[in-house]
Each structure stands twice: as structure tokens, then as C-alpha cells.
Image (cartoon, rainbow, N blue to C red; front, side, top):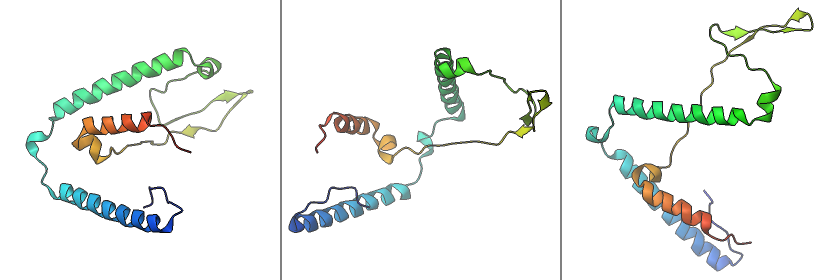
Length: 137
């Protein structure tokens, strides 16, 4: 894993490589120790609380989609047909029916870094400092 800048000075470069490898091994060891710890049932949220958070996020996303649709040029050019039942749809175009198209499942997920879960305040601060730091050439 090479996520550090390589210097042209070979002496500094070997020192940097050694330090980066030590740091990477250290961080991997810490991560393994976290993974070995038992999951505390006391810290788990109830299914009711998780459902409330899910519903709140879902409502926020729906509101954001509605606002985006209001000002969308693309949405003003096309017709929207909501499917309420069935597994597919077909269309009537230029005097004939088109082949049916069937719906396919689609899902996505994201994984948060451990720092976001273990220490979200420090992670937000690190992100902020990274964003405001001046970029070098």
C-alpha cells in the first residue's frame, strides 16, 4: 500500500519507506485488536431506534429528491410513470407495442472507516484540517 509521497533522495526514501511500513503494521495490529474485542450488547441500539433513524433518513432523501425534481431540466423533458404492480413494463411507440422490459434488483451499500465509528469527532476534525490545508505542487 503506497499512500505516501516518494522522495527523490534515496536515503530519505528508504527511511520514509521503513517508517511507513512500521506505521502500517502498527495500525493493522490495532485494527486486529479492535476486531477481537467482543461486541457489547449494551451499546447496540434497539431495532425500534434503528427503524426510527432509517425512516427519518428515508424521509430526508424523499424530500431532497422532490426538491431536485422541481428544478430538473431533464425531468421536465421526460414523462414519469410510476409502477405500482407487476415485474416489468412495455410501451406503445409509433403504432406498435415494444418488447417488455423487466425490472431487475438493485442495491448498494457503503462502509464507513473505523475512525468514523470509534471517534467521529476526531474523524470530522481530521477531514476538516485535510480540506483546508493548502495543496502543494
